[in-house]
Image (cartoon, rainbow, N blue to C red; front, side):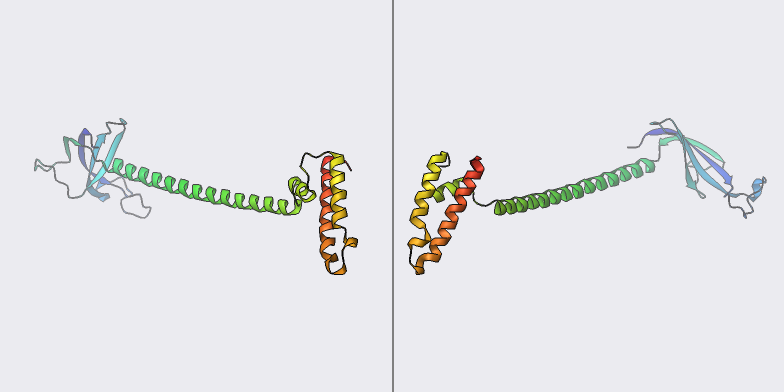
Length: 193
């Protein structure tokens, strides 16, 4: 948004500042120009501002002079440039936040996948649960020590490999091993061993 201010135009010769230029003297006839510059006080900040207007600027009154003043809207190029820079910064910040959010989501997804893999590996290493062992022995998981021992003996009498002919012996050995392993795990979990 442009503000109104008193703008003064001056036609001035200038020195370019280059070390080997002929304008590096105190004699103004060797200086460059003359060029027109606009001077005003910024209404928002109160600071003096200036802007190069050009070599061929002519004041609207048509007179040839070196100074001309008028009341007009101040050049808004700086505020437009500042707004464009601000919008560019905001766009860059927004893109950065979106990129960081995507990276964070990807890190969380990977962490969850790793956690699930570790949990599955632990479950595989851990073996059967207490409920599975109790079902194998045909008892509740809240069994007493005497009930557990009786159930184990009953199962072992039924599935002992020596009671079966050669053809079924291998199958019964596997069943007996599972019964013994379940019994030992249940004893160990309860501290009865």
